[in-house]
Every structure is written in structure tokens, then in C-alpha cells.
Image (cartoon, rainbow, N blue to C red; front, side):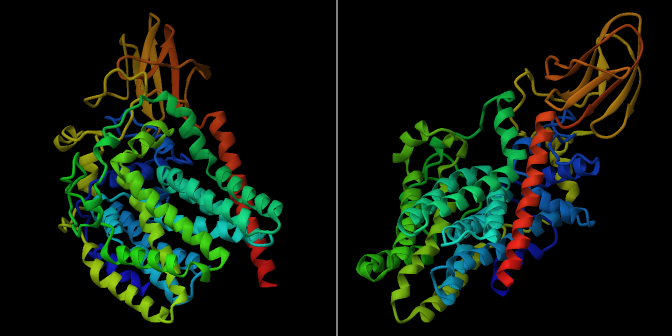
Length: 541
């Protein structure tokens, strides 16, 4: 906790600071709105796109916003709740990296590696330049996943570590799906290498590993399965082309720290610097690995080669020469920014401290890494300016309902892929419901999503309900469910209403498919908790 203070000290200044992804405050507001109308788990938020709503948390990593909402429900502001999520990521990621490193390092070098993991310049960029809350939280669970995989490849299956593996895998998926997709293949390489080279009872290790991974996928299935399956209902598109965001090798080693954006070419205002201490650890560690290779155990060699694979593989993936892989490997273009592999650089760099275990000066080296990592890099852990912005600023900027501010009108919701039926993005606020004929008598808005509409008409008519048509919406006329179609031009909910007096109910609920997945995920959580509790009791005995 004490070693975390230099990294989080700026978060104690009142108000929020300028970051690239400050939409996170608006999205936390929408999470709060969904939770308070008892939409569990939150998926469709009510206010985005001029009140047409959006299936935001059907596609966007929800865990950081769940954590933020816990603090929001205690009465804290949106800004303070988000800053607490930022702040907690530092000591927790340091702690889990320490526990992971302790599997093959002494406690001094493990602590040094944990500090190096936190005080990498890219961690400061994520927090105070980008404000990438999902990636910030993912840093907590990357070492925990690796730690649990090592534990699962010990000689006997531990119920406790099956539970930890399941929860950590799920937490990484729910923290940031792109980082999870990036890291899991690398984690599976470690798992396979340990099973093939180190484990005697391979069948038992394979079984335990599969159970842990499957449990994690089941716990998070309520999120990732609908996100994949229903992604086909949305238009494909991204405002970022990965080809514009390959950093140069010079940018990785140049001690520059900036608060701007990533732009095409080598003239970025954002820093991709790996940090002088991290670079020194990799160079010295790599030299010692080669020099003392025969002195390392087979287990240590596996970790060393794995660290080198991650580090140099990530550098390659950030270089424009890897463009052929970006074009051919499925889903990699969704990464958007090749420099996202800096996350893997930050994770793998502390593993090179393993090379120093064969020296006589491990305590001295550990002390130097701790002191220099903090002394050299803590100055990056502050915003460019303390703007002191509160909740109202972000609600005004990103929430266009019931009224859209002029600032919102000039801000593009660039991350939101529109439903396929949407021909035109809404550009103004509209009534909750309208019709092609004057059939609406009264609208009773039950909450931010649901409503009861009384109609009276001599003719058949079309009732338009200004929320995006998306699986989960249900319409009933006089208690009988009727078909919903996507209307033009916005892809809004449209219902055919017969002549006469009718009561039209329109509301959002989980689909049968999603309900099933919710129950599966809940069962997975309960199973993981049971494994943790019963496994802990066995360990204590």
C-alpha cells in the first residue's frame, strides 16, 4: 500500500482530469441508471443516442463499471467512484504480481518485480492520459491468471486454485475482452509448456487446467457469448485503422512522455516509452540468462523462455513488419492499436528479474529496482492539468437525454456501432413514442426504458417507440405479445396497432437465450466460491 502512494497521489485531488476516454464517467452514469431500474445484469442503457438507448454493456466490458457502481451506490459521485476504480488497480495489481513472482523468485526480487509492473510509464499513460478503465482493471487480473495456471500444474489438483483460476479468467474477460484475447494464447503456452516439460501426472494437470479455464468461461459466458452472437446485429466499423498506429522502435526506447493522442506516423503526442529501468532489467536479465543458462532449473528455463517470447513477440506485433499477421489472424484488427501490446511488455518485463537469482546481490538489486522504478517514473503518474471537473460536466457532455447540450452535439459517440437497421444516426431528441397517425392518447413512462401507451384510432396504424430495436424488447397489445420490427430511419421499435382503443405495453427484459446464460454464469460463480471455501478449509487442515 505504501509503495502504491506515489502512483495514486494525484487521484486525491478533487474532481476529474482530462483523459482521452472520459466517456467512462458517462457510461458509469448509464450503468447506475440501469441498475436502479433493476436491470440485472445491465445491458441496455436508456439515454445514449438522444434517448434511443444502446445495448452498451452487452458489448462493452462491464466489470470496471460494476466496481464503480458499488461505490456509486454508497452515495459517492460518479467521478470519485471512477477514480477509486483507478486507484484500487494499483495496489491490487502490485499484490497479485508479487504473489505470481514469488512462485520462482525470492521475496525481495518479487517485490521489485511488482513495483516495476506498476511503475512502468505505460501504466501512467493508461491512467492519466488515456483513462482506459477496462485496461487499467485488466492489469490486476493478468498476473492472477498466470499465477493460477502455475498452481494448476502442480502435482495435485487443488480445489482452491480451481476456484481462483475460474474467477480470475472470468474477471479478465469482463475487465477487457481485447486484453483477454491478447493474453490467453500466451497463458495457454505457459500452461502447455509446464504440462509437457514439468508435470509427471499430465492427465491430472490437463484435467485441472481444463476445469479451471472452462469454469472461467462459464462464469463470464453471460457476457462474451451474447457479445459474439449478437455482434452480427450491429454494423461493423471502427474509427481507428490499426495500420496508422504502429510505433517505431525508436519510440519504444525514447524517454518521452506526452499527453496527446496516437496519430498516423511517428509523430505521436502519446508516449510508447518502455521505461529506462524496464529496458535495463530486460537487457541485463537477457545477458545473464544466456551466460548462466545451465545454472537454471527446467522450471526457471520455462519461465525465462516464456518471458522472452512475450516480450520480443510483443515488440514484433507493434512493428509495421507484422502487418501481414494483422491482416490474416482472425479478430486481431479489433485490437485497433498495435501499441496495445505494451500491456504484454509491462507484464513480461518483471519476469526477467529471474535472471538475477543466480547472483549474490539479489537484495541490493531488488532495492535498486524498487527505488529507481519509483524515483524515475513516479513523475509520470499525474494528469497534464487538474481540471476539477465534476459529474455535471460529463453528464452534460455525454448524456443527450432529455436534453442534448451544444457540447454533446459536437461530440461523436465514436465507439458505438449502430444497429444494422439504423439508416441514420439520431440527431435530436424525440418524444418517447409517436405514430404515423394521431393515435396516442396517453404515455405512462414506467421507468427510463418501459412504458404503457394508450391508443385510440379509427384506422390501423404504426406506433414508433424511440428506442433501438434489439433482442430483449417486448411489445404487448391488450396483454397479447405482438411482433416488433425495426422502423425507418433510426431502427426504432415499430409496432402495428389495430383500430380502436388499446393498451400497448413496451418493455425491455432478458431474452430466453441470455437468461439461460445468466443462470449458467451464476452457477459457475457459486461453484467457484464453493471450490474456494472448501479448498481453503482443506489447506488450513
